[in-house]
Amino acid sequence: MRFLVLFLLVLGFGSTIQAQIDISSFDQFKAIADTSATAQKQWQKQQELAALTTKSAFGNVLNPRVPVSASVTNNTNLAVNFIPAEIFGGPAGTFSQVQFGQQYVTVLNIAPQFDILQPKHIGEVKSARLNEALQDKAIAMSKKAYYEQLNVVYHNILSIKAQQEILRESVAIAQRISEVVADKFDKGIASRSDKNDAEVNYLNLSNSLKQSEITLEQEYLKAKGLMDIEKDLSLNESIWSIDVEVMNATADGLLALDYYRTKELFQAQEFRNLKMDHLPTLSFFSSFNWQNNSNSQLLDNSQPWINSSYFGLRLTYEFPTNVSKLAALGTSRINLDIAKLESEHQRLQSKIENQKLENNYLQAIQNYQNAQSVFALEQSSFTATKDKYEADILPLFRLLEAQNKMINSKLKVATEKATCAFQLQNIQINNSVK
Image 1 (spheres, rainbow, N blue to C red):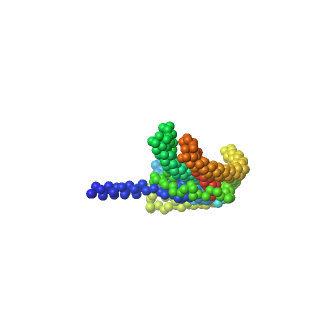
Image 2: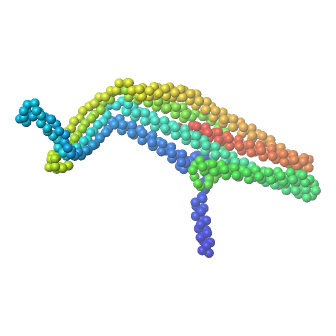
Image 3: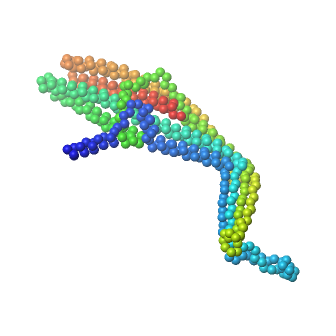
C-alpha cells in the first residue's frame, strides 16, 4: 500500500512538471514567446547597452577629470651645485660646492580639470541618442522577423490539425467502404481485387494520418525551439473558426524605411561631429600641491606641509593637418552619401513590400474561395458515385477515385484557409511592429 501511495505521488509530481501550455490564439502564442524567448532577453540587453552609451555621452560633455598623484622620495645623495665663493665671503673668481634640498621629500598633488566648451562632445550626445533610436529600430526589425517565424509555425500547426480532422473522417469512411466490400466478397458479389483495393485505400489513408501526427510533433518542436520552453504546447484554436475574409486588409508598415532614415540622421550627425573636432576647445585646469620636506625622516610631523596651488583656462586649437582626422572626415562623408542612397532605395522598397503583402493575401483568398467551390463539387460527386456504387451501377474503383478527389479537395480547403490566416497575420505583424 505504501508503494502505491508513493507511486501516485511520483505520478502527480511528474504531471506537474510536464503540464502543457494551452494556447487559444496567435496573440497569446506571441505573448508567451515575448516572456520566454532568449532572443527577447538579448534585445533587452542591447537596449540597455545603447542607453548606457547615451548616459556616457552626457557625462563626457564636461569630461571631468581629477588626477591624484603622490610621491615619496629619499634623496640619498643630493646633487652638488657650484656657487660663486664671493657670496659667502670668498675670493672672487672662485666657486664653492653647495648641496641644495632635503633628503626626504613627500608630495601630494590633486589636479581637477574639465572641459567648458568641447563642440564634438556636445555633438556626440546627439549621436548617442540617434544610435539608441537606431538600435531600437534594428531590434524591432529582428523582432518582426522573429514574429514572422512564429507565424509560420503557428499556422502550420493549425493547418495540420485541420488536415488530421479531415483524414480521420476519411479513414472512417474508407473503413466502412472496406467492410462493405469485404461483406460483398464473402457473399461472392465482389471480387478479391475489389476487396484488396478497398483495404489498400484504408491503409493508405491510415498511414497519411499517422504521418501527419509525426509532422505535427515536428512543428510543435520547432515552436518550442523558437520560444525556448520545455513544456509541451497545445494549440486549441481551430482554423475553421478564424475569419479570414477581411474587407480592407491594408499593409502600411514602414519599419525598414524608419530604420534607414534614422541611420541617415545618425551618419549626418557623425559627419558633423568630425567637423566639430577641428574647432577650438576651452577647458579649465587647476592644481593643488602639498609638500613635506625633512632631513630626519619621511612624513616628518615636526616639519610643516608646504602648500601651493593654481588654476586657469586653456584654449586649444589644432591646425587641420592631422591626416587621420581628415581621412575619417572623408570616410564619414561617403558613409553619409551611402545612407542617403539606402534611405531613398528603401522608400520605394517599403511601398513595394506592402503591396506584395496585400497581393499575397488577395491571392490566398481567391485560392481559398476556389478550393471551397471545388470541394462542394467533389463532395457532390462522391455522394452520387456512392449511391450508384451501392446500386451496383458503378464499379468500386470509381467510388475510391471519387473519395480521394473529395479528400484532396477538402485538404486543399484547409491548407488554403490556413494560408489566408497566415497572410493576414503577416500584414498585422508588418503594421504593428514599430
